[in-house]
Image (cartoon, rainbow, N blue to C red; front, side):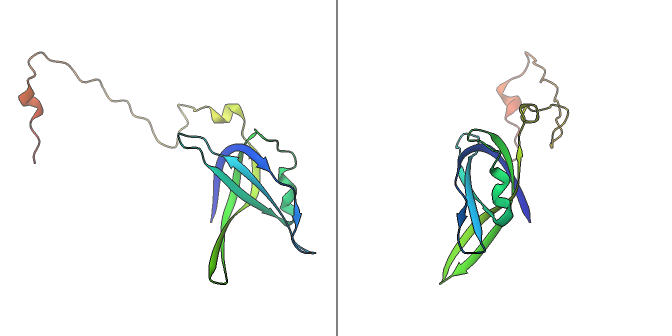
Length: 125
């Protein structure tokens, strides 16, 4: 199962050679929102170079898989990135006609002077 997330590049680490045949590289993005999160991803083997053209502060979309393992009765989870794309300013701006959720306009409530508090006390419970 794969996931994707957008964020601003916060830090890119150097590639580390873990063994003679295995290398890994990590990078961190900062998500947007009221409570921004710093999310660390791991790249392995030949994918370590996919962030070579990315700079700190760039907006990117990261495609990743969840990886989990056990070692000595301890559990570890990695976010294994496998693709990174630049996010353009045009793609970031919301497009009213192209949304995942259909928008629906509701008519404004009509105001009548004959309304009383009793009209609003008609709850069935």
